[in-house]
Image (tube, rainbow, N blue to C red; front, top):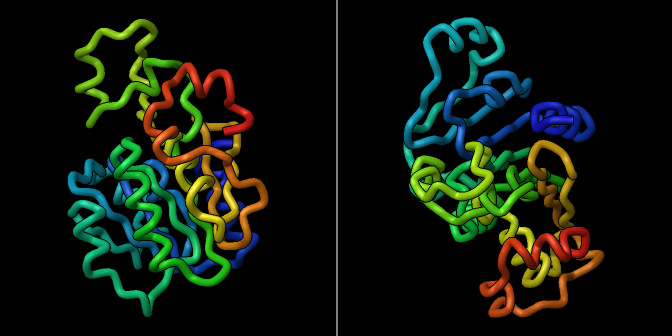
Length: 210
């Protein structure tokens, strides 16, 4: 399965009406998702006129917020919660964590958060950075522009610190983290200080456990 299939299945299963997407870029996922209310957040939308026109009927009620996720959440209305949210913004551990925590504040009861890029396949794909272009300049062995960054640490952080969340990762589409409210079934027995020092090699050795 890919991200769109997973998101749409969750929307169908939860009978979700309100969908939020952080990090939209070309709109490949956002424009295809079917939901009554759709909100897109990206500081630099790259959706072509042709693609927007082709999907017009599916997105008549879509909202587009050209700003960072931090800016969006400063004014997000908790009285209009989201049933499903997809986080695919800046691929850094701190930003992905902040996006999850901010989304939780506007997530409806029974809501689901999906986080992309939680299971990087290679050390190059997992290399920390602010953009794929920045990481590309490093000429890392195995680099192929499939960049996940260190978002995987966000999953670990939440499994360590949040006993009120159920979290697991689907092994598809570079790892789709699924987050719902509820008692954590298997908290990760590490400290946040230990997490900071972990590398991709540690992830490779403990991928299933992490």
